[in-house]
Image (cartoon, helix red, strand yellow):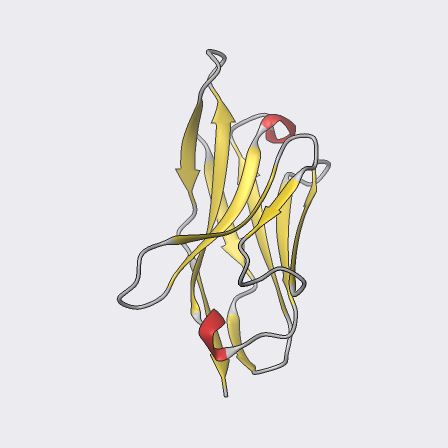
Length: 120
């Protein structure tokens, strides 16, 4: 059973920084595509950033240049470094793991979410 545990959320002033962490267990972490998504009140969940098993990254336009996703396979952990935070970054942030099934597809797993609040 794949488990994802997020940490690092909190309250920060606009312009500040936070680092989110997501510790994974129950799969071969290095093979997973890992990602961060977020959901603000009244809005749909949206992609923030992803990193593939070989380190290729992808970012939402709204966070490019401010956020950075990186993984530490030795610690089975993926991070999201968030700089220059804005009030519109306020949301619950979810860790996602795409675990290969061995048939060219993958299964998605989600963490419980961590709240990030940016005050103006």
